Image 1 (cartoon, rainbow, N blue to C red):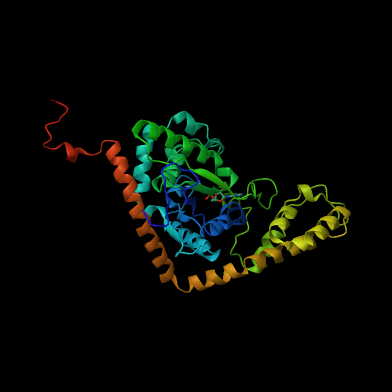
Image 2 (cartoon, rainbow, N blue to C red):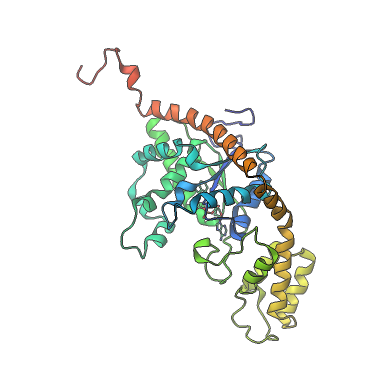
Length: 350
Ligand code: TYM
């Protein structure tokens, strides 16, 4: 374990180790950023962080093997563009560390199917499927393995992942009580942004729903997306009074627009003195400005693909070293130690 880690094995305050992951559905979007990424960047200064592109999770939904490699790289670029620093954080791709799937399998031993079936995400995603892939049900076991493999004490995630984290804690508890204390019960670190809605103003912002704004979108694309955003449905004509509290555009203003402008935007909305298009224009400009530096970093990285590879290879190497250490203990405690029985005179027959 590295010097930066103060792992105690109890998941308490002294455990400074962080793990979090993101699915590679291409570049990150505003929901990923507000729910997770911006928090990751802050945490890396005083924690030992592992941030992972979880490509093996992607196979449980619709995915194209031809597109996956580029999506993995695009997400890694998003991580670096918003300011994750490979000198401070271990940034890597899940499938480069085979121990994730090995631990997931072993955690199957202590995970009740009933708990998996109760997961909201599983129920939502499987609702209209004729044939449900087993991976969709078992998905949270792999997520638990991701976290427990690094014996992380805390996991910064958006609201939608809290239930999976609760299950991770339960799996850790069950495993520890059966095989001896090894895994801390990881705590969630919430970004404070709640659940960010998509441009439709109804559903969670999510790539699969096509309601996102990418954090690395160029300004014309930001405007193209933002101008389609749904506002207060009661506001039909330009000078109708609006209700900022139910308007998703206003929520996004609060995250991205200069705080000094917010009171004016709010009162102009209520008074119907500023039209929706103008209001969205300000939002698009704010998003553009907020991510300008990130776009520059991304462009720089795209020009040096060797650098991205170097970062991900180095991250995988560090991650594998930690993973190996945990798995040695897991295998030993679960009895995958037949070599120790050779010649010991102990066999099932005696
Ligand atoms: P994923 O890839 O869907 O999302 C990555 C992170 O972004 C947050 N997020 C949001 N937050 C607020 N509003 C939104 N609209 C929004 N959309 C996404 C998510 O909460 C998450 O923090 N199962 C996980 C990936 C995962 C993982 C892990 C996370 C796999 N292993 C281990 C933490 C630890 C997922 O699908 O997140």
